[in-house]
Image 1 (cartoon, rainbow, N blue to C red):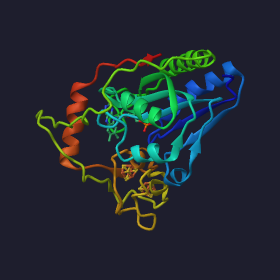
Image 2 (tube, rainbow, N blue to C red; image 1 turned 120 degrees about the horizontal axis):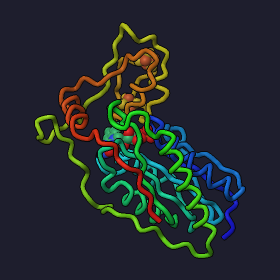
Image 3 (cartoon, helix red, strand yellow; image 1 turned 90 degrees about the vertical axis):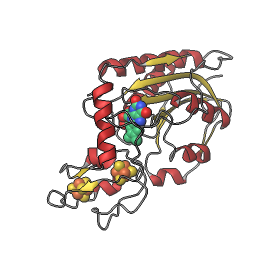
Image 4 (cartoon, helix red, strand yellow; image 1 turned 90 degrees about the horizontal axis):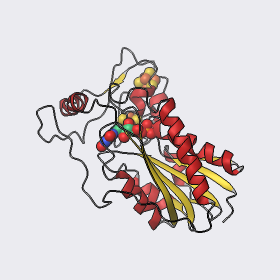
Length: 271
Ligand SMILES: Cc1cc2nc3c(=O)[nH]c(=O)nc-3n(C[C@H](O)[C@H](O)[C@H](O)COP(=O)(O)O)c2cc1C
Ligand code: SF4
Ligand code: SF4
């Protein structure tokens, strides 16, 4: 099948998946000499549309790993907004240096169910959304170069008459990773929400605009009445450093991760 368009499709709260997927898709588009379209479905307004893809498209579809799978509150968006027509597709996940566990297998299964033909898969390391010390600064130039190489190989595979489905490890039905505290015991911070330092906040409203869940009240950013998925977009983007999480269970989990998963993890690609 002749590829006529490459699409970089991603959900990316803190930017790692965006950088990785656009690097891969950009190289694929250059190799195939076709346009590259960006579809960023991170924010709620982008999730009200339907996105259909043709067999002549090559899609790079990226999501982060949350608790060893793809974010459970974003999964319904993948299931309801996207459809392929035998569309050759690269499934891409990013992860914050612990493990991508079963996220890539789950993404492959969901895309396949929606009519995408997954011909390659990759798990790339990115700075942990809530721990600066884990994979600090990644994806770095080496990761992005590997992402571009992955894009090149995926483009070459898509050009084949009948590209085979990618062999991807993991179990899409596996349970979510259960967070542990610094004492090694299971912990739970599902109800945690960001705290706002009212002395620092200048009420610019950016945190409310970048929240993928639309959880922060734009009229009063000190309040987060909606569902928070701990993505840290508001924390990372606040120009005043006014947002933070101070839930003790969450901080204990952070401390455990920071103490345990410091060795740099590797990017992995599958064809
Ligand atoms: C709620 C939450 C759960 C996470 N769970 C994992 C995990 O299980 N394994 C891991 O290695 N990284 C985990 N991370 C880190 C993210 O996968 C990583 O930072 C990712 O690159 C973020 O993608 P983004 O910048 O595109 O939003 C988690 C991050 C968040 C916010
Ligand atoms: S981004 Fe920061 S400074 Fe701006 S409204 Fe939100 S908390 Fe306040
Ligand atoms: S309020 Fe929660 S869901 Fe919204 S940006 Fe902040 S961490 Fe993410």
